[in-house]
Amino acid sequence: MQTRRDLLKRSAIVAGLLAGTGLFPQYALAYNKGAFEAKSVADVLKALGAGAPTESKEVTISGPDIAENGAVVPLTASTTIAGVKQMLILVEKNPAALVARYDVTDSVEANFATRSKMGQSSDVYAVAITADGKAFFAKKEVKVTLGGCGG
Amino acid sequence: MADPMRIRAQVSGDKATVRVLMSHEMESGQRKDAAGNTVPAWFIQEVTASLNGKVVLSADWGPAVSKNPFLQFTVKGAKAGDKLAVTWKDTKGETRTDEATVS
Image (tube, each protein chain N blue to C red):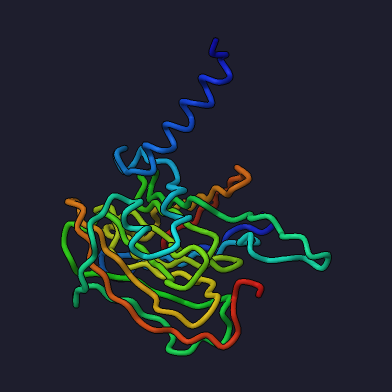
């Protein structure tokens, strides 16, 4: 016989799985754990329900060529593509590739800067995902002299 | 958690550039302390910013965002005197909101 506790646990797991597939509308989407635990750029995009990304000149990722301190690497992601719904910043060789995800509303420009930890020299990606699930990216190599993940 | 966020919002034309500096450990969960135990992950997961009460930005962060996180974005349609509020929520469920006036 199913206890109430089991039922609650089970529905929480199912809700978590559903949220991970991106079926829920963006604003109702609770924190997407699957995307933040994905190890590769392709897995992150799959977890967010976006298609395979294509490189685009309309997306830019800027950051230093050489980061002296891997614990604090300033990165800026921006795009001029219209109809962008989300922007992502990813560090390919980090233990978890996705650094940050920004929802783009009509009130903000698709241009976000933050500082991120980088464990080692790696490619850094800015990805723009449009309303129809297409993903466009730009990448840049950032060399790190001192790793930022405490290693 | 201890210090308030530092928020600077400056108008230029009809847009405002907003810079926020938050005070938070942002433990990635990858570090080991002196005894060799892994320091548990503790980091800001959700950030929202509202202009005069209307949400203009929402973001999800992972453990890779640096300690004392910095965020910069540009809001359209902001005027001097508008109220900009920034809220974060972390993995422990703690949350903090700070407000600034666009200048």
